[in-house]
Amino acid sequence: MPPLNLGDGGGVDTLSGITTFLSEGGSAARVLTSSILGIFISPVVGLVDVIDAIATFATAPFEGAGESISALFDGLLTGPAALIEAGARISENAITSVFGAELGGILALPLTVALALASLYLLATFLDEEETGNLFPGLPFDVPIIGADEEAVDDQ
Image (cartoon, rainbow, N blue to C red):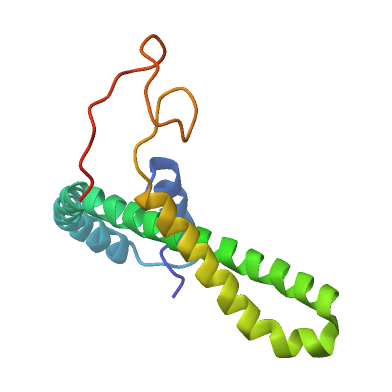
């Protein structure tokens, strides 16, 4: 028995599928029972589609927020890690070119640790630095006409 193919369910596809089915020896009773079952099943399928649309509408903001948070953490962690990796490669090339491959390989770990600790020290001193003026960095007072006058902030 030939298969009953109604295409995407549009009017022309349905009529073409029924005509092809009947011309290839298909049963008219099967077409009739399929049509009756389709009449009873289509509201259930429509209701399921409406429920799916409501569920998708309710969960879409949470899925979008999850993807956004994932992209945020990826950007926050991957970007600095790539920067550290690039700095490590530059340091490796510099150590190798200055000390040679053999001595550079021996001194690579201590020099890398020293560079990392020096970087952390510079960052800590920058964060601990007292407030500066509004004209030039490091100037201990504000120039009254230029910039905004600020109150001293107690950083604790």
